[in-house]
Length: 446
Ligand code: FRU
Image (cartoon, rainbow, N blue to C red; front, side, top):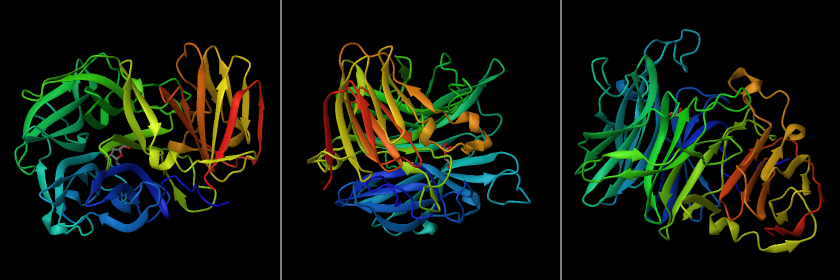
């Protein structure tokens, strides 16, 4: 069994967050959190791939690796922008506060984080000598930020200046809370603290990977809050989106609507957006895998790139047209080479894709991957944290779904992507069974 054909995977070993996603000089560049030596997380490097179409990716090897005292234990997540034809890359530089004598690739006791940048002349060469710290490590006396947990700078340009959001945490009433720190710069090199976004009604102790942008005139904050849900069944950290108010002069920011999940399969984490060739805001995200791919020594997979749009004050998603238009051949058979299944569900509908079940219960799309998910799933060494059953919020009225199956991953778009539910699966069978399904259509890419 070969790996997914249309989804982004590492050639070998461990991959987590997407980083530095950018359309630059006629090509998409996508970097990724990468541990090149093993199939588990360790000293973070940035892997690098390029693509002309967001479908086929060329492996460009390792772009960033620890080389300076300040990033000696890792180059954590970050972003890229273009400035005067050059690629500016921002990342979190990591020092382990104590080395683990048995394994130097994980910290023996916490992190020391600063925000750093590196300038690439061409998007292919990354001279470590251009690395520099732009936001130093916070000290215990600072009233904001955190010495260890301040990370994932996301930069953009707006009006005549550059903005950066950084995920962090602070203590109040003997509890840790997540926060987003906002910096500004005139030249994208020299950065100044401007403001912070906090909201103690969100029960999460750290906000990772913030990303702020406009979609259809609406300001949105995407982030990956840690420990936001702890029902013992699912991953404890989930990516969310919220509508926010943002004043780009004072950088005052506030969340105006409770965060909602970006994807109800809850494998999704650390999404990052960019602008595509045609000006669409697109997002790509990590789907966490509890063990290696079926065909070997790689672990971690990205969603399809998704175009963001607003409908009735709700952030919606559609598969990027470059990918979606590949599914143009109407077929009768189901096989495990990429397939798109479109249909309408009603309350008696049942769909079984090679052991992966989809039902429409209590007006929610529900998935059950028990039969196609390893019993040995041991992410974070705790199988109970890897969920097997998932559901969307309640859907009013009709329910049309588009399902994309690519060997080990199933992405379900409900009612034109108002909700998306993506699940990693293992050992899917080559069969499709269903009852009470309307308007079923099957598409292949060839
Ligand atoms: C999110 C994250 C980031 C961090 C990176 C380290 O998955 O924890 O906050 O920069 O992964 O690999």
